[in-house]
Length: 551
Image 1 (cartoon, one colour):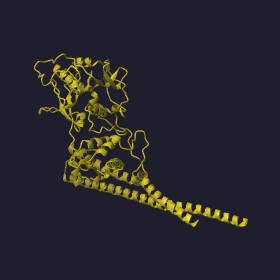
Image 2 (tube, helix red, strand yellow):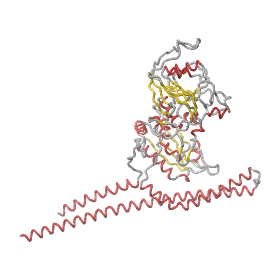
Image 3 (cartoon, helix red, strand yellow):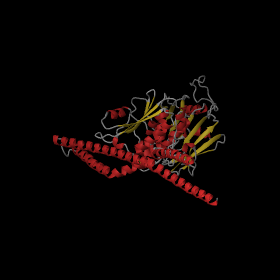
Image 4 (cartoon, one colour):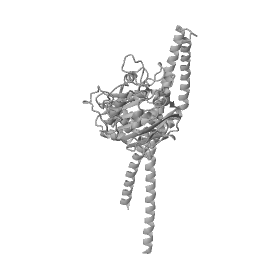
């Protein structure tokens, strides 16, 4: 019996040892199980596959100002650690404290990280991704309102490292100057969607009048076509028949053109015969559509799109496959046409073209596709470049544009990770300890920030008075500003001290929890074991007494 008791005692101690260590790992480390349908707590499978196949070392450097090292920074680090865990130790993560006017802030700006706030107290929150060859990609500002886009942005930037060659995209936009021209006399600028696409694509402007579009373009985007010349229509059609991919933003009324020119552009598109030959019946009636978003990989997690007005179309060509993406009561707003296309020309519309090098094609010789949208203004900044402090971007216009371009360009090298609209990180017990510590010091931090804001407003008021001529920049005023700036630095120092106190208090709670876990759990186990052994002994003793009495 004694041997059995000792064996049972040893087993319980071993179980207790493993239970304590498992408990510490589960409750104090950033570890969680994800049973949500959309896997919002874990990395997308496409990201995991990319990290699995990656063979080169990658480095993530998160530059953070001390005063911004908060819960959001912890969430970013949580996501980066997920990348590290799935990378076979090829992904390194560094959190770099970046005080204003320090060597690290200079380094951050060299990488392209944008300083936030005013010039006196700049703040930094940006990410640099570097491969083993020294090539880098920078996310200049990690906007808290765009946390749902965090994995999307990191993965796309990672996949464009390692000698990534940008696919070529052509832009044909004769009426709207969406892209800065090659001429030195062009003082325009790229629309924001062009700037964003340039990160991953080599974008070139196609002039109206071109007679041939090379197949080196992975896709051609046609925006608000107006008076497209006959030979360019022919070039678009031949490009499609040779396996090219077209995205056409066909608009009956462009609000962007009207805003820029003060008049309505009623000129014909020049693509009427082209669309008719595809079997597309276009309704030019202008409406404010109630958009119905169809279920498709290209529209996944897209909850809202902003179109102030749009036409609609119907497809009556049974020889083509049509996948509807957006619709309204009047008809389709966006969709994809695939299949065998035929030329609307019997021969080239000009005689000087070199038909030996570029023979006329009357039927598709390679699979191509046409993506048609009945509005071009959804590309305009005014309709999608809007933010909301509570829900992030209020519409998904650019998400749709980006996915359509990826799809049309068949860009499999890019990780087109769908933004997770409800992305959050698990609130582990360790995070709860941090929140408890933050709540303890929250009143003190709030007081410091309030006093700091009052000083900043005072400095701003003095500067405005000087600029408006209400006062003169004298030695006394300069000395006053200098004194106030020193007070600001003191407040920043106090905030950093409070952050350190929060970290120390969090570590103290963690240690107390670990000690309690180590002492209490084995104590309870030993107590239970003692009670079991005691009951067994009493039971055996009674059994022996009964046996003796019977004899």
